[in-house]
Image 1 (tube, rainbow, N blue to C red):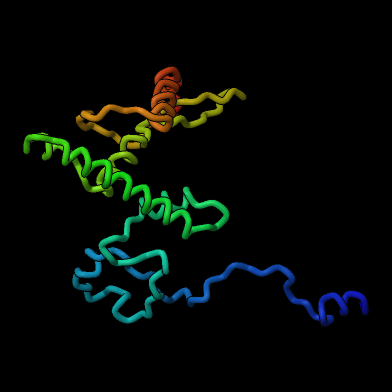
Image 2 (tube, one colour; image 1 turned 90 degrees about the horizontal axis):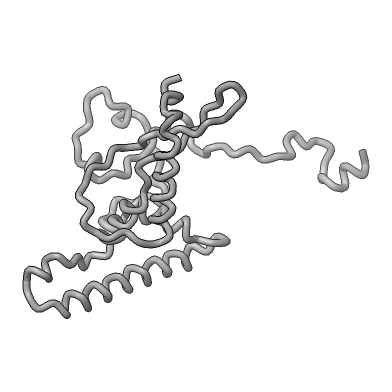
Length: 192
């Protein structure tokens, strides 16, 4: 017991493992980060009128530049917790896209060609994410001890495909779609 007391500092150690708990009481309401929801009037029975509200998270913001897709992508780029480096990489990427598009825009001779060129890097980024997002995904179903992969449509995408698709990510997306097409025979497992 004396040896344990020297290590821990006292005889009484109620909990050696910290538990993750919120510092806010459960009666506190979650904050609203969406600017459009903040502008709406509150109804009479809304609990936000009479209950305290938690403060906004540091990652959420109501500014024009707040983009959850960009934040998620920045976190995917981040290595070893170096968020400043990941944000700098993303800023340099947007600057590179902007410079390249402006060069194309300046090289055009007619106004019709200039209207077709998008110079906003945010829109180009979102279009690239949209092009790389798969429409189908494979879901496992076990029948008789054998696991089959069947296709599942995550969301229906019907749009005009005017842009040429290329790159490693788009190839992965196309491979996934090809694999889903090959496993169409197991589609009836979707409803079982």
